[in-house]
Image: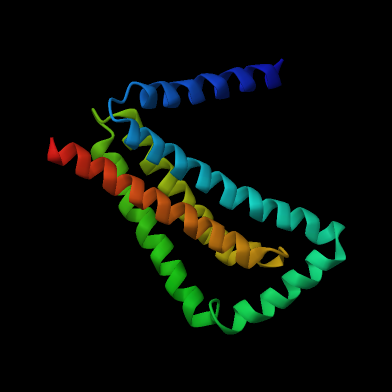
Length: 165
């Protein structure tokens, strides 16, 4: 019974978001928002599939070990990890402040975008420091960064659209 209730809540939540988007007069904005959402989901789903197949397929495990060595010497040096932690922390703080300030009387889309951006920043911090035992660790960090960048683009578009009216 609990699973059915969670399923119903998720459907209502999805329809609320999509209903708000369907009311939009500008179809290009709807298409843009939908494409951004699909890219976000695909980036995380691909990383989850990589992690799953890392224990199932030896070729995937070899590829991930090789990429781990490459990433540790280029993108994920200790200095870069400290910079990434600072960026995630600053992003989470800024999004939390905006969420508290703009939550009163703001539209649902802005609230959801700020919430997702805050959640993604916090997950980025957690994965940077706790998720190191995952095979696809570096890909998780890159996927979270993609989600955060897309959320920031979405927030900029939302704030720009509201301020230009």
